Length: 320
Ligand code: ATP
Image (cartoon, rainbow, N blue to C red; front, side, top):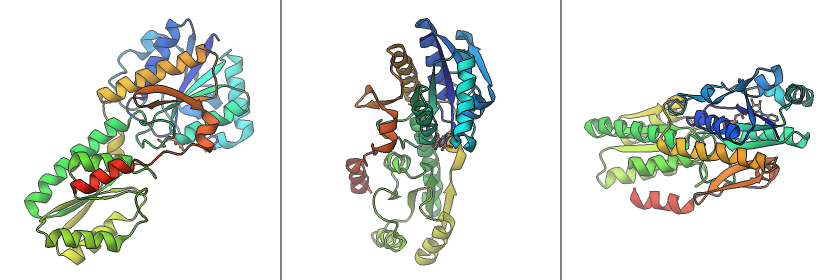
């Protein structure tokens, strides 16, 4: 293999730049030429592809977002669009592609692999919702942002005897909420993996807390579970305590990556290159018990499921 491509796709995540930097630097070390694709699969289709040298990735390791750009490009689901994308790569003699992104991006990488064009998936998403890896790139940074937000909300909650609901991202994965609730010392946690959503039960738990003498409370909840503003109204109605909902939104996706995310991204980007050098394709990279691993990208998407960390969840319940 002589030439490889790299792109970032889906929602941006802090640490994506560190991953691309590692791909470029390790690729060059291994004697490869590395091409960067701008704006994800959209740029792959339009041919927005440029050769990168070691200086193309200078001063990027500390930056959030992705300097290559990312895009949502639903047209990539069409086979003829993917054929044109493969043609763009073949015209330039690029033999394999590293895709840094979430599960939607993995799907694109899987489809290209099934069409005979080898891809390697690197998990870049703050949601931590990818099978075959304990951690995704960007999760740790987002988690620290959420923790800091909870700390700040706690100050005002305890000063004013308020209840605060914090809605965090994660799509359908409760990891950000779970970890942040433990780190932030939240009183209540609602995540999709634990139980079916039961507003009456949560209200009862909050009432019980107040009966025991709690004067303020923080409720951490994963997005897409319920309308948090309506929930705030209902809690306020039942408890008589002023209740506010805060939707953290894209604040969670920005900012300089943490040390953990930079190192994880560097390891994973480097590992993806090693796999290509060894002649592997159609794999996705993960980290399990601090060891880099790789899985079949098709199997990872079709058969593997992310285990729910019940132990950590039980811990959160013991500490409330
Ligand atoms: P995040 O979870 O952080 O938002 P993601 O990678 O899951 O990231 P998506 O928007 O779901 O984000 O997917 C990114 C891109 O991957 C899509 O815009 C599309 O170009 C491509 N993609 C997604 N699903 C498919 C599919 N079924 N077939 C081909 N390409 C796909």
